Length: 368
Image (cartoon, rainbow, N blue to C red; front, side, top):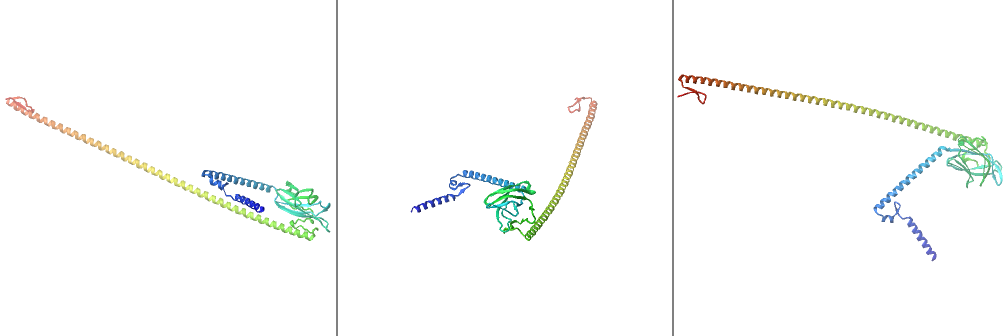
């Protein structure tokens, strides 16, 4: 019964933990808290959450870029592939020293591998297994549990570097071993040069002559394949360069045509602008001539009007003069007539002897 109760408590605790772990979140806030928040608080939470997320994304992008730059710098500095050669010295098993055949191999950046050192005793050879890793300019040798020696990058690796009298102790013991690290395989003894990658013989005996020949042919074949790949890569790069050059020339030709087109368009616009200005100039000249013509006509009209007015004035003066002359003539005629009548009446009065001046109408009258 107690066991059942304890089991129930444990299961209940696990269920509560799982339910708490499965609780829903909105922008980093638990759902129950989210439901109690106002709209302005939710907006502020969303803003802060998005800012934090954007900051985190930027930080991760910067870190990734820095890591990429560091890795690129390392790869640019450290060789991508190195060749190692172990020779001389001996390995120790139960206090007994055993000289071993030299061993050569190739390592790429980030590669880890194992190899066996085989004693020179052909009757009952002994061997030990060693682990090696090449990472970021460091070559590490170990016994499978830990790395016992580390060799850091040196500029001499690019031309071949030698480490003399190497020793380390662990699950495997080696003493007074020479290590070569370089960009090309180390040629110590042509017949004993057993560079063959992972095809190192595991049977504990030296390689026979025909096996060495086979390996040499195999290496020559690999070298030819490598050379062929290099030639193909160079041809590919050459084609790519030619294609880029062709594209560049086409781009330059298009740019040249575009510039010529723009130049022609510019000249056409300039020509149209000059024609427009010429038309505007001609239009202004035409308007100016029309204006001058209208002004000339207006002056001629005014001149004619002035002349007409002067002519009318002259005619009016002429009529007035004629009228005055007529009136004057009529007056003179009237005066002459009156004078004649007066002279006739006077003569008549004198004839009768009764003249006594004139009457009211200017005629002479005679006394009774």
